[in-house]
Image 1 (tube, rainbow, N blue to C red):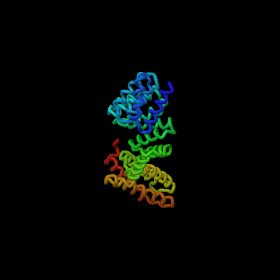
Image 2 (cartoon, rainbow, N blue to C red):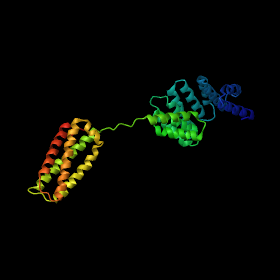
Image 3 (cartoon, one colour):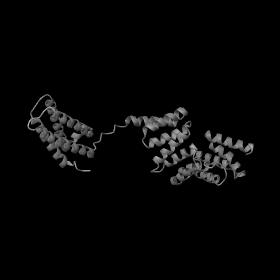
Length: 317
């Protein structure tokens, strides 16, 4: 490349970066006219048209660069951005993916891919993945984290969005867009209501069915073993039975939601009463009690509760 041409390209890049794309175009038009096979000059011209909002001219210049020898992915990135500005989002995604294929180690390709995918109805996840990859390839580039923050914001991933914007601001303290978006994320995180607790009814009915089986079956065994007069040794068996019931009952959480439905409330109350009576009788038995009446009452509560489990849907999958 001749020294004058190099100087013109450098000056055009500076003008575009400083917000003077029209002056850059005025510099570049004579250059591409005199050197129509110079890929970088066409790319610089396309970039200046993009900054000016002239997507059609930018696309034409990018297409001219595509057929020439030069940087393999730059024309594809420029074409993708121009197509996106023109509302041709599917074509923009194709061009952006092609830029990634041609230069998979260039973080700018992933940034462009993330930007154009954001305009596709089902492109949110891939856009997030592309932006994340860009930030991993270029951990010192504020733009990569800005795009990652935008992708995470669209996905409502507040934590990632906040981290990305904070990193972008740290890398570029003058990044006003990231500061504004960070404030938006913080407002939304603060206003986000806590997720309501949900009751897994399938799990609840299964746990109730298991609890009823333990109480009915275990209680019946205790009744048989305790005839005609229970001994303190039986308390070790019923104590183990109570412990198993407690373990199964932990699957009924959150407990306060169990009483939101009348059928569940009655069933849980009966089985809970059975466990409480069985626990009290076990303690009394270990201290020398010989009565069987509490065990009979516990077993009857379990039988009725088990019947309600069966009727109420305990067998549903």
